[in-house]
Image (tube, rainbow, N blue to C red; front, side):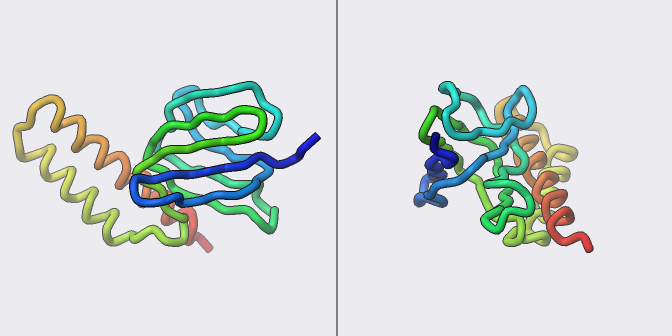
Length: 140
């Protein structure tokens, strides 16, 4: 039995990550799930939150912020498609705070269509999640 699964994370610009991993943990509408080798097929939306590769304490452990996307997993592979993924240690706190403040101001002071308002709320949710992820990564 193989104890690793092949993970590919693709963004519009590039293949962000490619390699064999033991487990991938990410958030779906049903909560956080762990994807391991030899699983039954799964296709799901990914919610805004953290994406962990391997387990904490493992020398190959990596933690990322993901701003949503799609995941397909089966017995031997996991494919993630997203337009927003970054290592926790690379989050720009000032940018996230700027995005949060801008979105809050726009939502408070302007009238938008329902679609544009949803986009602003998504931008706000991503900014707040990035700020939380930054503080989690930099706590002492």
